Structures are given as C-alpha cells and as structure tokens.
Length: 296
Image 1: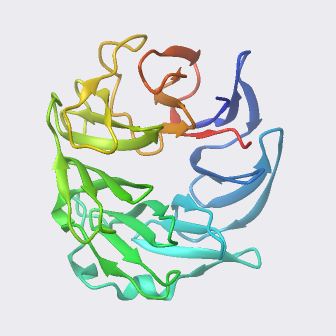
Image 2: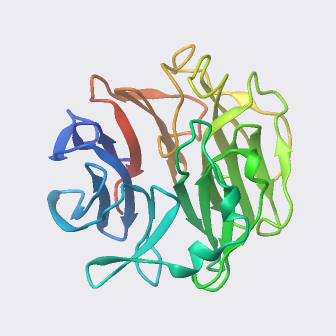
C-alpha cells in the first residue's frame, strides 16, 4: 500500500524509501479520483495532480475547503460555514439544495463559530452523505438537489463513511452504524476504553476506529472490529505506540484493499494484515493532516 500524506508543509509520497515531496503548502484534505489526486492547499486553493507530482492550481474558494469527494457529477467540496460546492468548468459553485436542509439553524460549534462540512461520503447507490460539525449527517438521494437530516445533531459526528450497505459515523459517543441509509442508528462501544471517535476506515471485513478521551486527545488509540456484526472492539497494539500523540483525526486513518494506515503527528504507520500488525512507513514528517492511498 503506497500512500500520500498531506502535511502542514506539503504533500508527500510515501513508499519503501525516503518520503518524496510532491507539492508545497499546508495540505488540509485529499481525494483520489482514478489516476488523479485532488488536494486542498493553504485552506482555499484546490489543486490537481498525480502521484508522480506535477500539481497545478485549478481554482480557489472564498471560504476554507474542509473535505473533498469525487462523484460522477463532479468533485464535491465541503467548506467552512457549513457550505457545499461542486466543481464545474473549473469553478466551485454552491450546491443550492444543501442550504435548505431542515434543521440547519440548529448547527453549531462548542466554541461559538460556524459549523464546517467536515467529511463527505457516497453510497454504492449514489446516495450522498455530508457530515457537518456540529450538525449531524445530511443525506441526498438525488445527486445533491435536495437534502434531509439523519443522525441527531448532538451526536457530534467527526467523519462519515460508507461500506457496502452500512453508513458509519465516528462521533463523540463512539461509532454509530446505520443499515438503512441513515434512517436509524445503533452505537458500537463495547470494549472501547474511551468513546470519543474522530476517524473510521473499513479494511476487508473489519472496521477500524480511532478514539480518545476527548477533543484535546488523551489516551488516543485505534481499535478494530468485525464489520458485519456488532461485537466487541479489539485494540490495535502490535507495532503501534502505547498511546498516540493526540487525536487520530478525520482523514488520518485510511484503508485500501487489505491494508490500512494511520498518521500520528509526523509519523505514519501501515498494516498489511487489516490492522493486526503495524510497521513505520515514515517519521519526522511535518504534522500530517490527511492520508490517501496511491492511485492504482
């Protein structure tokens, strides 16, 4: 599993040798779309390139970009102030229906600022999911024309992901799971030492989640469990530190096939057996903001 690491000081390609710097700037989010790699640089710039480098600026937005999702209808980007835009003719244009979702007036942040569209996901049937922090998860079944709320706003979701027929939400109460496209949710917390979850990834028939004692981190670890059942979690230990430096954040736990990787500050770990054993891929990187598997 080759990796791309977006850091506070550039975009790096990670493999068996030394990290290779592909682009500069503070890389806040990434998405792989076929052979292309999209990245958010210095908060507002959208760039495109390949895993071999050659990144060029596509456009910029007047609000910071928080999340990216390639779709058949064009690249979606979540923004600060709980916005959603779509790339069209090299311009980021508002997804108007997102501004009309019921309950939007109840979105908030604990510190009093506007909420962000923190993560995005798409189901195999084309359903779109937008995680607002703090605002729950909005769902669209018509390509983004209209949206409706799903999970309770106060669940405090940090990342939404889709695996097969399941929608997964890493949230302040643990991992929430829905098997009816967000119509109802159940919580998986058995075996966790703490419930504050910030990232989720699916590898093979397992799901991995990062948890800590709260927003500031503290005793942060990664657990794995069976995807198809609601059994207890098992902590990932072999090859990992006793505790991570801080929260393993949204976008810093990624999977590809049977491999999975996690970023902890400037160190990246990789497992080729679904999270059973881990090895160090890179150390002394600038602070990692996000990871992505190399394009196939």
